[in-house]
Amino acid sequence: MSTADEQKPKYEFHYVLQCPCGETLTGLTEDEIVEVSFAHLGEKHPDMAYEREHILFMAQRLIKPPDA
Ligand SMILES: [Zn+2]
Image 1 (cartoon, rainbow, N blue to C red):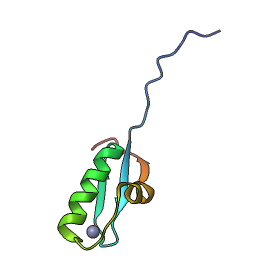
Image 2: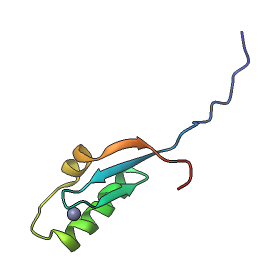
Image 3: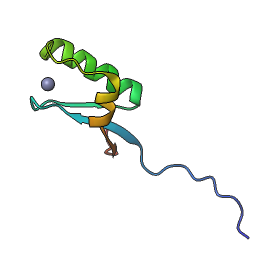
Image 4: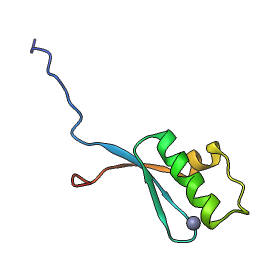
């Protein structure tokens, strides 16, 4: 049996939401992408009423590029 490897994640993930207006919103956590999206919606699309669950539904969890 091999010794227990400390498996550190090779990749970090982040959340990416492609807004219909073309803006790409990113956050490192669910809370962050929701916060960033609310801020963007409030500024650019004040008439769009998205809730947290809508944002999380649309957001994709992607591998974060190494240099970011
Ligand atoms: Zn937008």
